[in-house]
Length: 267
View 1 (cartoon, rainbow, N blue to C red):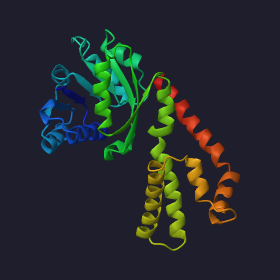
View 2 (view 1 turned 90 degrees about the vertical axis):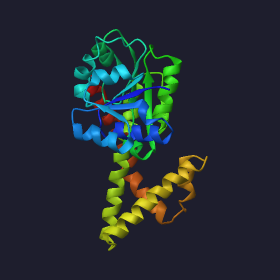
View 3 (view 1 turned 30 degrees about the horizontal axis):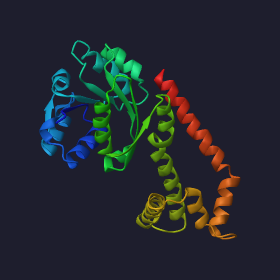
View 4 (view 1 turned 120 degrees about the vertical axis):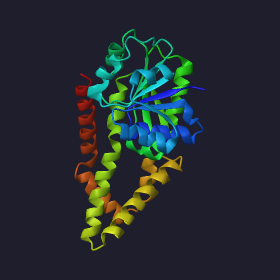
């Protein structure tokens, strides 16, 4: 059975740990580290996993190491492991904007590294993760990583690391786009006289229903839109206003801005 170390006890690592346990992985095969005793001990107490303040101890224990620390700390954390034998280990990074080359440089000797871009719905098991494997990653390691990441949602494997920046713009940042749109709809619902509870329920159930219609139908999203749009009706009037207001162009501009920022962060 694979041993997994989680460096960091933040929300993303906690979500993956929960997903792994729900999928049947024994708690004894998981260890978490964090500078904060409260954070790591809380996870240990809640899930029965191992915990330590010693990152090196955790890496020695594990076959797969999930780097769930802030991007600006990646180099410092990885340099701790450079003297260890990492030839049989695989690192999975969930740190935004940190290329494989930077991680391997800090670790030294070019160990196996998988760079990922998950998103926040992973906390509910409904995430989507873009993943890129370095040349050093074996097929077995990739398969283990695939199962690990699927514990919190779906996985899209990339042949080109640069595509991670596109994943960031689509799904990494994507939930916030929908939240903003839902927030705007909620504000309008309140302006129509619905109370706060009613406004939220109307908006969240509409969003949930629309998403599930996409998930549970093989027809295209554009066809689903057409199916609910009666010619000359209320939906058509709203969609016409969106189009005239430049919504399509605005989405393109906004997602490209996210890609550009991701590229800047990687430098």
